[in-house]
Image (cartoon, rainbow over all chains, first blue to last red; front, side, top):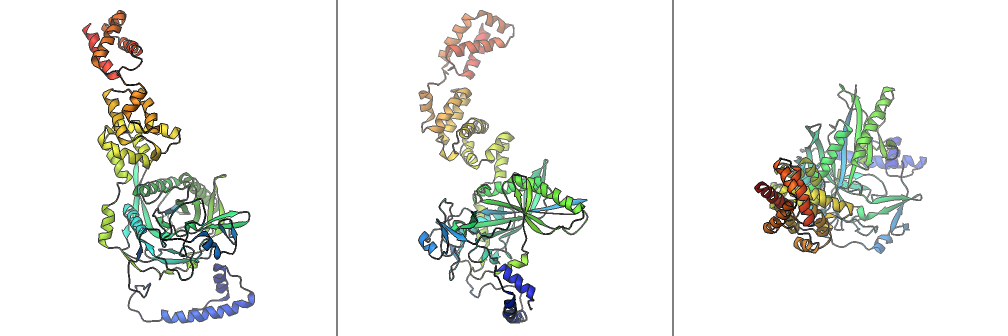
Length: 96
Length: 472
C-alpha cells in the first residue's frame, strides 16, 4: 500500500499538522516506508482470524472501585503552557 | 414516497466511585481540575487499568436491555486529535461491545413495539471544554469518567417513537441505579441520526446526525424538523451530504456544525494496554441475580394492588418517591398510601422545593398516618395540617396530633351525648329525615361539627347519627 500526496495531506489534517508543500514528498516517503514494512505482516501466513491484542496472556486485570490518589492542581499545572484560573487553556477548535 | 430511518445514540455517565481506567474520583465538582491523575491526562508511560465496577454496571445495562453478551471483550483506540482528549485517542469498544443485538419495548398508541438495540459499549469520557472570550478552557475532572454508549438499531420511524425510546431507556438505567441520567446535567447525552429513502428502496439515504440534543422533547422536535427539511431538499432534487448538525433551542431548527469525519479516519485498532476481559457464566449470573426491580415490574405490581394509572405514573417517574413508597406499600393500605403520597405529600414537597431525601417524614409516621385516616382517628382534612409538620419536623405523628390539638373525638359515648343534644334541638330535621330527605343528615352533621369544633370523627359520627335518627 502506498499513500499519494492527497492522502498524506489528509493524514496531516487529521493530526492537525501544518505541512509545507515542499515537505510533502519527505513525509510521503517516510510513511510509505512504514507501510511497506506493515505489508510484510499482511503477507504473513496465519491460520486464524482471531486477533491478538497483546503478547501478554494475562486476562481480567482490574482496579477495584476505590480512589487511590490524584494529582494536586500545582502538579497538573506544571506541564501546562497556558492557564486561566484553575483551567487549562488549549487552542480554540470550535468549528460550528 | 419518502420515509425516514431514525437511529438514536445515547451516552450515559456511570456513577461508579472512581473513573473507568484510573483510580481518580468520578465526581462532579464546581472546582475544575480537581479529580485528575496522570492516567486521565495521558502522560507518557502511564498504564490504564479497568475499573471492575464499571463492567458490573455496563453488564447490568446489557442484561436489562436484553442484549447478547460478548463474553470475551477487548478495548479499541479511536484516534482523533482534539484538545479535550489528551492522549490523542479515546479508549472504547469498537469490535467487541459488551452488549449487542438487544431491545427495549415502548408503547405507542396502545400498542407495544420493540426497538432494537445495536450495541452497548464501554468507553471513557473526554475533558469538558468551555469556550469563552475566544479561548477554549479545559476541565479534566470529566476525563476518564465511565460512559456507556447505547446505540439503537435504525428502526425508529418517528420523532415520537424516538422520544418514547429515550424515556424508556432513561427509566431502565435510572432504576438499575447505574446513572443519574440527567440530560440537563450532561449525565445523559442524546444524538439522533436521520435519513430519508424511498419506501421501496433497499438502501438507506444520506445520514445526517443531530448532536447533543438538550432534552427528550427536543429530540422529537429536532427529528420532526430534520425530516421536513430533508424532504424539501430531496424533492427539489438536491443531493444531501453526510453532516453533523445541532439543534437550536431558540428557533427550534437544526444548524450545520461540520462535515463528518468518516469511520476510517478514526483508524481504530485494539488497545494493547488493557488485557482481554473474560466474562464467565458465574459473573453474568451473579449480576442477573442481583438486579434491582425495574420500573416495569413495579408498575405491574402496583396495578395488581389496584393503584390507579395516574398515581403509578407519578410514583414511577420519581425514583426517590418510588423508593419511599416501596418501603411502605406492603405494610399499609397501598391505595390510600399512593393517594396521600402523590397528592398531599408530593404537593407540599414540590411547593416548598423540598427533596424527598431531606424530608423528615419517615415510614413509621407515614404508615400510622394512613392507619389513623382509615380508622377515622383523623380526617383527610386534618391530615392536610399534619403532613407539613411531619415533613418539616422530626416529631412522631402522635406528638403532632397533640401539638396541633386536632385529635378527633371518636369516643362513641361522648359523641352520642352531643348527637342527641343536637337532634333534640332540631326536630324539623328529624321529620325531614323520616321523609327520606338525606340533606337532613348533612345538616345535622354540620351542626355537630360546629359543636365539636370540627373534631368529631366523620366516619363514626355518620354511623352513630344515622343509627340515632332511625331510633326516633
